[in-house]
Image (cartoon, rainbow, N blue to C red):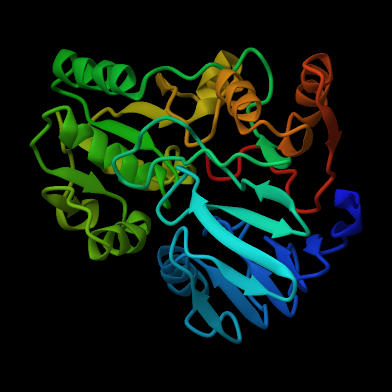
Length: 336
């Protein structure tokens, strides 16, 4: 039995599958890349060829440009593809639209590179699929025991209760434009909120892409087309716009921010957030531990976050665990 390090190697560009001749989520341009999802810390321009789910291809082309790779190869979920001596399958990761785990089979060994993932059902993307494997490469964005995300329906309930309590104020919610914005829209509609929802212009393009892929969010209105005030309404904007001059047009806004980082009250205070909403598109600590155990993997590589704490916990569980210091994965608040 060969060691995983003999065919999955850490290079300056990131994780490299030597017998297949491709990188996974490389941090710099490479000849061949397999991309887990469209967030900017995983999907970058300049690759010769890109393999990804059809939705991730659309996201990359919309965000980075139609010619951001030499060639795009859309690969449906669960369809096997052989490249070199490696069989590749993409499985749902439950993170955002099109997000996938990369299953690699080589000489009887099965490795799964999870990318970013969550186990919580999300109406805007396919549910995470557990894939038994020998090696599991996991993120650790929220890899500390303190991080235990609230049920998303409960956080939406808190938001709607605040809207009802303060009808004279606008509720301004900071959220990332790819994934979080659209999930909030879907959750609000699922909770029975049927009023128009107002969007900052920067959130329009990705929301339009979700709609083109079959999502339905009810009536959406750009703030720029709605005038000033908007008392009693819900407005979504990028986090960077929460304290921008743009927000001064709104009626005494209640500032909210939807992120797993809102579990840390100090971060909410630092951002001046009045209504922190603990809604994350990543696995929390219990989900990380549960997922790793359920894969059956005896070896675990940890990246993108609180690596040391998770490696320590996995050692106590009898797993062979190591941290991968992948370049370009150090931004702890990257598009949660």
